[in-house]
Image (cartoon, each protein chain N blue to C red):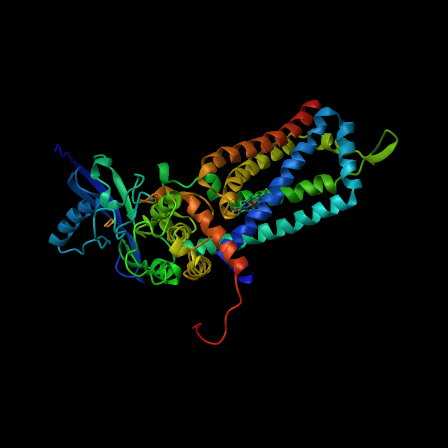
Length: 219
Length: 262
Ligand code: HEM
Ligand code: FES
């Protein structure tokens, strides 16, 4: 299999699989965070339930870290080798039906900003101020309080919205691309993948954007 | 025929040889019939250049019917120009308007070294075909019409992929200079048919290896290749190539050492 993994096709299988791990995670993360709309307490309880299940927590963290390392490593590797394969680019960019979609052209830029976002996001929340609260007699982290502190600042809200729009672009192209990379594209649903990738990217993005905006407006 | 005349300004990439410096030269081409093809328009310009004692613009062409795959260059950044499903030899000047400025450039890819002006060396494609784009079983004489049954969808798919003329527009329009569409068309063409299935795994492994070795890039699914393809080869072919490559990698048998099998 070593030949597989070092080939251009094999690298795209890995890129796609690791992207899918993250795409699944961001969907779950977005959906779980919706508890904030019910109540800060439910949000805290949801968070507490996750960190209390050590197997789930460490298992997920390990899968995410490993996937991100592979995804980013290959992103850099492929971007460099693809540029050298192209050599000199055409001096004019195609317009009309033969143009390359912007989202597809700028995956590495979106990805780099996403990586910075992921790190900042972890610093802000996971490794941020530890407030405590007691709900129904159980002591737990008061993440809702931290969230409302962070998102009472307009620059933080703006930063999140911009990063999430980039995530939208990344997911839109990525979700559509993954079917091809993994060899799953089929004429019977080829046309629907475009619509599905838009739908998925928009649901995740609007879901995520609604949360800081809601907290900002409530603060 | 109401052939209208238009005047154009062309910015053409001129480069004497592979290692020479290249640059754009600007030419005005006057009284171009809208019934002329793009290549005939360049012929007209070349005639003027020759009369002035200048070097004519070198470009590849052969059939001028859109079937041989010899012609091709970028017009304003689009491979084979703005129209879909066409080659530059079948692109007519009625698709352009009077006074337009057109930038004409060769295919850009490290795996297609430039020969001269708009001409590039596409032998890398030949080497990909040589690595597995053939069937080595002895097919004998033409078989009876219904001796080898091929389901209609398979026959259609093989035919759609066999339409690839190997012009290189896919590579040229790809930001990665990827040959995935070309390679997949050659593979799917053969591997959809009973005679081609036998060597399917070997074909997938060897063709992908050759494609990488030639220095073509990976596929980023931008779709520009299929959009520029004069024969509309579908992205689904690339998915099939990827799938065939995975399957072949999983099936790979250990090399048989010690000479050819009897
Ligand atoms: C939330 C995090 C992320 C998700 C959900 C995600 C998802 C995806 C998916 C699904 C793909 C499509 C893979 C394919 O074409 O088969 C992809 C491609 C890509 N990702 Fe990510 N990604 C994430 C983070 C990143 C980061 C941090 C980087 C880089 C620093 C990055 C760089 C790229 C690049 C360059 C591609 C395109 C590869 C190519 O051109 O073939 N991504 N991503
Ligand atoms: S010259 Fe044969 S395809 Fe254009």
